[in-house]
Length: 317
Image (cartoon, rainbow, N blue to C red; front, side):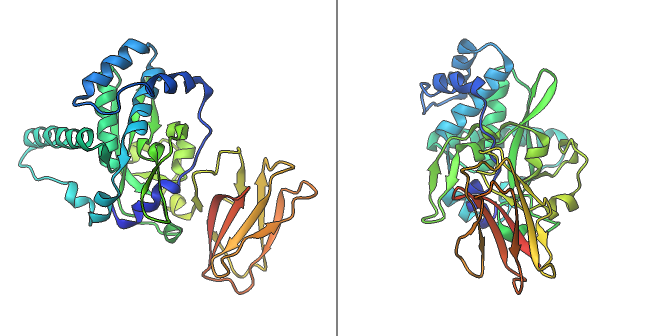
């Protein structure tokens, strides 16, 4: 993964996790954090849970609780090619792929650290050990304002699909584990269940798969490029922010912003990158629509906050 990915844990959508899985999470918290083999954890999951959804959640939670993002490894990687291997035919490819995955999983369990490929490989294997079908998905993650409007983003991320009741569900254990502090570039554990069973629509806000079979909605790479940058708190308050186009024309004197589900006591603010100060959007009359002046702001980024939580960033052109 590129250097930019060291920030990506902060920059993804976030749905409040279902109360249905709170009990699962509490049970999994008591599992050992360090094991030599995943069979130890899979046996505990199969003993404690019966439904496929609960097993999948237990797999997700154990990984997110106990695997830290390896910032140093992410920073030292120049490209995805460092994760590659050569092969002569399909048989050799499969054999090397199995050996490669087992090596990454062993290193992850030994160190308690991983980058996204390690997270996704552990999720795939542990899911299969508890009787679930799982696949690794590689693709692009929109994680930085500079990527707004960029069509050909690098393949720099990995997440998973797991089959539940014959339907593929999406999970991202890397993003569920925590985030990277922009203050000191260190990993901060912060379990987030929102990246478990994400809808295809929500996943698309930040993830674009390399293999289009995993897209599952009628969207294109161009559609993805035009999206704003959505941050991890975006869905916590069930807000929906419009417009969905991440590129704003500076020729428009005022940018019309709408924040649906903004409560009476919620405070909305914005920051222009050239000014770097929070400006209050008046909500005294329960307003949900606002006009933001953009004169002379071409090249700026406009970032929206609700209750001092960062929500979404737009590019002004």
